[in-house]
Structures are given as C-alpha cells and as structure tokens.
Image (cartoon, rainbow, N blue to C red; front, side, top):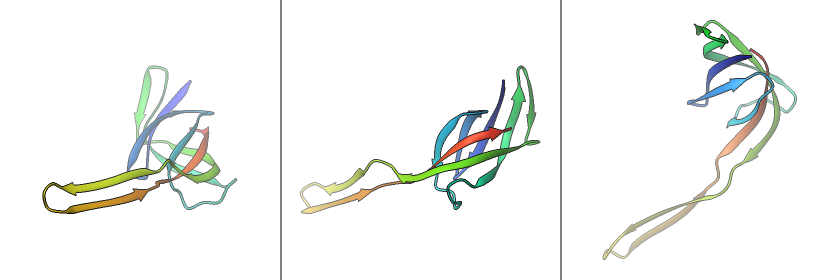
Length: 96
C-alpha cells in the first residue's frame, strides 16, 4: 500500500490512496482535481523524499465547530469574547 506525507495549508498530513480527509481551505470548486506536493512518498519499506506528486479530488467545503476566544485580566474590568470557525476543504486522495 502506498503512502505519503503531504503539506497543505501550513500543516502536514499522512495519507494513503482512497483516504478522505479535511484540510485547510483550498481555492478549488467541488469535483475539481488538485495536485499537492509530497514531502515523503513510499510503498512498503522504501521511501523517496519530495519526488512525487499527489492527485486529489475536492469533495466539499465547510466550516468547523465554533471555538470561543475569551480574554480576561482580573481586577482590571477587562473581558473580551470572540467566536471563530475555521474553514476546511474535504478531499479524497486518488493517486500518489
């Protein structure tokens, strides 16, 4: 089974063929194909560094769960509350 370690959106992911995963937002429409650079690609015990490209299909776009950013300084009458939802793109790894 072939595997790869990819970098997209400033994060690294370990992937295999046929896997679906959520990565930070990619500017492609649903159904389009994306080429992603690989850091390490291999099959079994052998591995090559940075020599392969990876093809993936964009399945959907969405936004994650809301997180609350709360700041407070005690005894200073200072409180700030802010919410944030991170966008993601769900992709399916087609070929390494």
